[in-house]
Image (cartoon, helix red, strand yellow):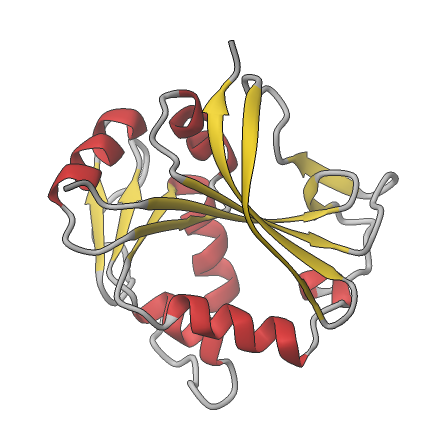
Length: 194
C-alpha cells in the first residue's frame, strides 16, 4: 500500500505563493483568523512525514530559526511542523541540517518521493516547495493538492507563481471549505491532462 502524498500550498487569489520586498502584507497575508489557525493545527496533528525541497527548507530555517525554541503555546502550528519527521530532498544542502528530526536525501525528487510513497507507513505532506511539487504532480505522485486561497490580489508585489511552468492538469474537487468567512481551502485530486 502506498502512502498518500498531499501538496499543501497557500496562494493569493491571483495565484502567487508569496510577495516581494515591496509587499507589506505580513504572514498569511494578514488574513488568518481562529478557524484557519485551528484547521491548520488539526491538519498537522496526525502522524505524518513532511517532505520539503531545499529552497523551502532554507526559508523554514530562516523563518522558524535553527534552534528548537519555538514555543508550542505561542506558535503551535510552526512548533508542530518543526517537530515532525521531515525529509529534505536536495543536491545542494549539507549535513548537519540543524533541524530536530530531518533526513537529507540526495537525488531526483521524483525518485525519492516514489520510494517514500512505497516505504512510508504514514501519509506524506509537503508545504510550498513549488518547483519540486510541480515535478511530482507531472509524474503522477501528488494524490491531493490542498490549495488555500487567501482573499488578496498581489498583482504588484506577488512573486512565485504557484503553477508557473507547470504542466496542464484536470482537477477533481474532493473537499472545499470557507474559513473565517473569506479564506478558501480547496482539495483536489490532480490528473495530468491529455
